[in-house]
Image (cartoon, rainbow, N blue to C red; front, side, top):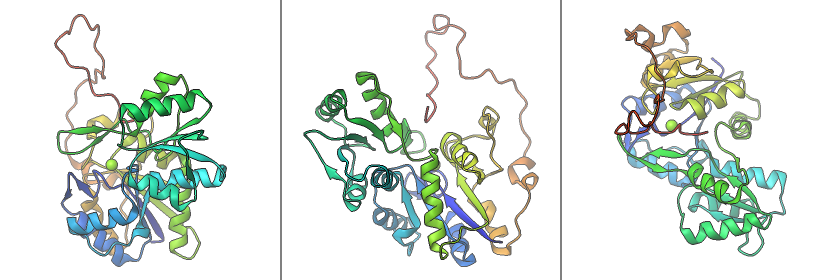
Length: 306
Ligand SMILES: [Mg+2]
């Protein structure tokens, strides 16, 4: 089986600082199979080195930094390819600053060509500066479109998308969003995957992720296979709401261990989740008939990305 894998991390490999059951065996089997793989994350805070250490602490030691590709690296590559002499004002953390530094993109707090928004590091002072730079001609770039990110089983934190949305509202300018599902993220990740096996792209590329708007949509638009796992942000019932559908739906990456070890992929209808009974009930959608009639009902959480 000549396959390569692009694998999301949060909700696929771990959740809230714990490995998802079966994820360790899955990664070990993947390493043993010799298939090239890259972990693909929209989180722009960590460096590949940070992620390798983090997975080591969670029980997966020995993964080299070259196995990780983040939206911060994608943003730095995008700028160095399309506008190498640019300067940037950054709202973001270590992973983004390191990636830009590595690509020799200069920081500029006087007249930047871009305001680059990543995860975290927000303050009203920084937002006010960024607002003023955009008003004076800087372009607005975000590392990823995620409005929120899971931090525990029942909690989230604001993501880069929500910081960019603040600046879009205050300046009236639209941001350009890198990271998944942007095709540039997949284009660069595929190149990285090909480099791992001597420059030839594997015939069959499989994207594994838990989020429809980023992982699955991006995979489909890049012409790749998409495996949705239900160990993260998406429930089986929610899948039907989307225009685009994953190639396969799995409970978790644990479902792939056997076929990876044997080298025999199963077909879509063999996906374990399709053997489970589904409740048949109408889909009212995320809407209220009127706000006035349901004053006490809380609003549904907005989609992870726009
Ligand atoms: Mg995820």
